[in-house]
Amino acid sequence: MSSDQTFVDYGEDEPRARRTTHIRLHRATPIVPQNSVAGRTLMLLIAIMTFLSCITLGGVILVQKSAIAWSSDVGREVTIQIRPIDGQDMDSNLRASKSIAEAIPGVGNVRVLSAEESGKLLEPWLGAGLDLTVLDIPRMIAVELSDPREFDADQLAENLSTIKGASLDTHSAWRQQLNAMSGTMVLTGVLVLLLIIVATILAVVFATRGTMASNRTIVDVLHFIGASNAFIAGEFQDRFLNLGLRGGAAGGLGAIVFFIIVGTVSTNYLPSEAGSQLSAFFGRFSLGWDGLLLLILVVPIIAGLTALTSRMTVRRFLTQIS
Image 1: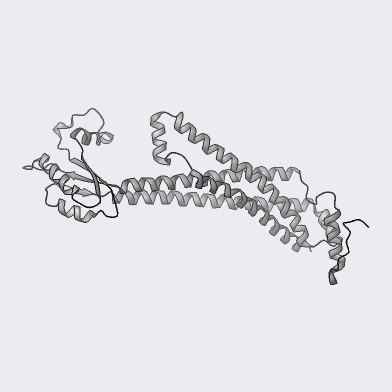
Image 2: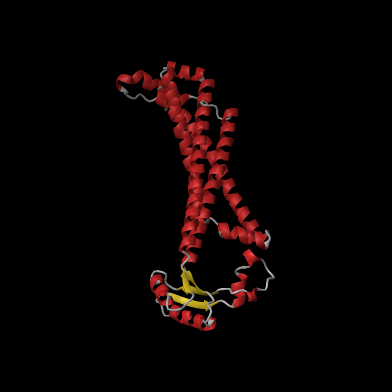
């Protein structure tokens, strides 16, 4: 007697269990074809879907990180504006406003912008090369905060009210718009990611049903010799899990290579203007270790969904034909 033919007591379901065990121990070839055209096509589709999922997720991560950095930078600076008023000495008002700001807890550096610097702030709207000396341009004071939690904006605004033409801008409106914009982009990216996952699941469903239909004869024979639905579904699940892992790994690796290449190009090869614009929107175009870990986690998630979807589809198919 060979070593793999061991007698085991299976109880009342002994004939079926013995035949299923015999199939597991003695079949020379897998039930589901390993290198079929449909299998290779599905693996390619999973690779593409994984690549798109990782690109979408990476874009969401970059935008979120940039938004957090923007909000942090904006939150660490407020601006005092001094409008020209007849009868008021601008230099005196600038010195007084600077002294008031320096006396507020949480304030670090206070710097008065020169008239030329204030004029350059208007160049994006008025253009360069204009003589701004004939215009009454407000002067600006940049206030950098050393501790935003200790800083009292209401107290500073109240103290500045004693100076005519002085006003405080905390950039709160800008921060709200920035947070709303980044939140919208993140939500859009998440919705796109969900749609990609749904499309992947539908593709696996159709591929599984096609494979089941093309192997209907094999399934009928397995039923005839006593193989259970769970055993048949497990075979398909293992096959599609393998396809999901291989396709997902290829797509995930392609996405990581994509981000590395784009980050390198944007840093070293793009013109300074284009690079600065890209950096302003996506930061340093670096996902970081946490971002890379999330991209890597996409691979087993896609593979798991592929295997689970195939198993559920097979069980439903077998229930219908039983």
